[in-house]
Image 1 (cartoon, protein in one colour):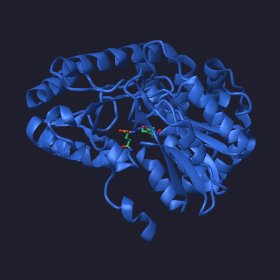
Image 2: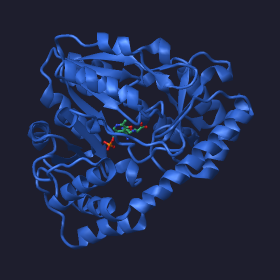
Image 3: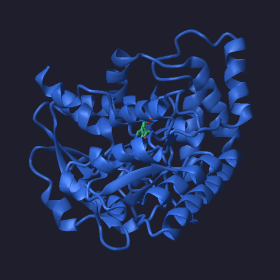
Length: 383
Ligand code: PMP
Ligand code: GLN
């Protein structure tokens, strides 16, 4: 269909992973860890298969998983959700995002997004024939932030919802209290729904805390919070995600997802229920380890004068193509794979405003320290 033209090729992540494999490059491109999650989580999946949990799950997800998700929301954010009506399990966060956008918007509606935005948002909005209205996250010398007036101006009579990703891919930004307060204020003033993608909720460093938009006064009733197990437990291939929110929003997601996939990965759902209940101490270690890996990579790059941007969370840190004498991250990334043996993601692929993202390159540090050191030394030699 015409509306899919822009999305016909493989995603930037698939493309860069394939190029990295061909070239034997150190792959700091696609965001997936190169070591497994907690052994007891893996054992729980094997055990679930052994126990015969191999047929369709209920369309809303295994009850034990919905209960574990609700319990985590209470423990982590002091929010209460009814596991029967206010939680739905999806095929990764990706399906929850797609189902929310398809279910909550009509063709011609508008959705406000922060730019840069995760690749599936643009594609799903195009499929749903919804217009994306970007609000740019600009680097102000200290951090990536947005102009409050630009955000207010983005609202029109056609605005249906605000789609927020925090912690944010690819900037590594955690939206702070005042930014969340402004988003909440605008949502309430214009009766907008908020859909939040919080897949990196547990990967926040340096003692900072992630706060769900739904915790702000008046927001629980208009916010659909999406997350997934992939990043939290280093199992990105399991594709177990979920959405929590008031029943009217969760029902909408369920209505769409029951015809997209109906259900997903029964034994993995059982294992994730175990993980959310029993493996959070492992996640604390993961968080500490990822912060060390970020520091390792950033220190190596800074030592040779490569500019990197602040990163408070996620798997990603951005560097500046101009440190390599390029003003264009896309050309640099292709040269790096070919000539330096390092794969990275040109952040511009995630930008609506191509000029704003032109010089940025995203590096994934969710990789073994040896690989990070190799990649950093190759970058240093090339710079
Ligand atoms: N949202 C963001 C911001 C992401 O970076 C990713 C990729 N991990 C996803 C959603 C997709 O999550 P999942 O693999 O659970 O579908
Ligand atoms: N979320 C991963 C990233 O940002 C990519 C996942 C995918 O390839 N769809 O790198």
